[in-house]
Length: 331
Image (cartoon, rainbow, N blue to C red; front, side, top):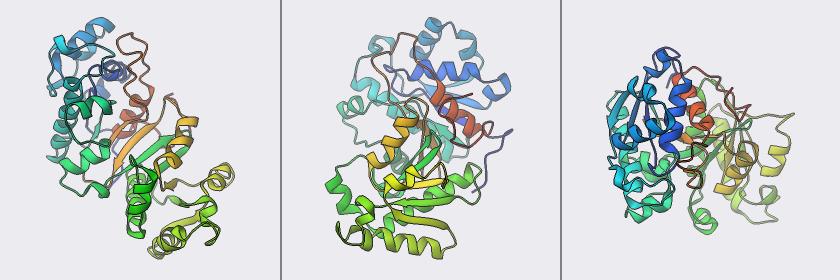
C-alpha cells in the first residue's frame, strides 16, 4: 500500500444524511479547495437537495464546477433540515455505497463520506453500526476485519471494538482481533505517509490488569498480541493503562494508539478535537474517511456548520495536507 499522491489522488465525496449538515459542509469544503484540487473530487448525493443547498449558501458556482453523481436520490419534499427521517437515512447509505463501489472499481483512490445519522438509518430498516461495517459489507469482508481509526488533536487511535456494549466487546476480545486492528492501523499510517509508526496498546482493564490483580483479560489477550506484533518487526509498547500512555504522549509520543473499546479511543479525541477529527475506516481494500462528529441536526439548514473536519479528511486523502494529527482544525 503506497502513500497518497499530491497530484493524482482522486476522491469520491458523499453528502451524508441530507437532513443534516452533510450537504452544507460538503459544498463549503469544496469551496475551500483550489480549482485543480476540486477537479479531483466527485460528489455523490441527492442532486435536488445539493442544488437547493447550493442556492441557499450562494455556492452554485462550486456545484457547477465539480462532477456530480446522482446517488441516494431524495426529492426536496423529504428534505427537512434537522428532521430525523428514514428516507434521509437510506439516502446517506445509498450514496456512500455507490462511492465505495466506484472506488472498488478503481475509479477513485479513496472515499470521504459525509456525517450520517444512525437513528435515521435504523428507521430505514438498515443494519448499520458505523461506516466500518458498511465498508466491510460492500467490500465483501467480515465485519470484524474493518476498524475505525480516529485522527485529531495530536492523536491517531484505532479501535479494536466499536459500537457495542462493554460486555459484548469483552466476549469478542481475543489476541487475533487486537493484532488485526493494530496491523490495519499500521497500514493506514503508512498510506498516510508514516512509514514506520510507533505503536502503543491500551490495556483492557485499568493498569492493563496490574498483572492479574484486576483479571486475566490482558495476560490472555493484549500481552500475547504485543509479543506477536513485536516479533513481526513492529515497534509496539504495552499493553499499558490508557491513562498512563496518554498522559506521557507529550514526552513519549506514539504515532498510533490501539484502544480496546469505543470510549477509550473516542473520549481523548473528542476532548482534544471536538469538531476537527477525521474518522477512517481501515482494513479493507477501500480507504474511507469521514468526520469525527455527527450530522448536527440542531444546526442543519442554518448555514452555521463548519467544514473543518470534512475538509481535513479531504486534504489528507488528496495528499495535499500534512498527515500529522498535531492540530485539530484545518489551517
